[in-house]
Image (cartoon, rainbow, N blue to C red; front, side, top):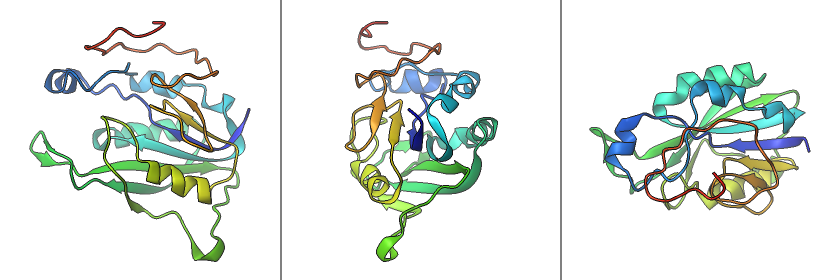
Length: 187
């Protein structure tokens, strides 16, 4: 099925420093920039599609190249403000970011003056788990069908695929195993 709205949280390959510093939090497989770029996004994206890509601060340059290679046009960056985040490598990282890109025509529902905010608040949960508040905003403002790729759990109004959710979508990609705490089911 081709989707009008895609949320993707690529499992960025961040290097051994993260795995060494937080060995119990990285419980999923990571992908290189090249593997992410090779991901068959066009199998899931409608010709008129909005793409919301979660990105770490250090991977923004790579993400912009990947988005362009996928045939999307960068539009704006959204920021999730997380006041309870810890310091990391000398910086108080209290934000995560989502790049919004599109191709063709993408209509955001702005009925009654509502919009997608460029800064949003959401409860901090497990490592890499994205806030429910983000999905609620998209559910109200973006067209269906929607898919959440590399999801940690299902969200109402979105088809889902990821290491932590069961899904019907089978992806022909190679992943780097960084799991240090448990055996992967089926891998």
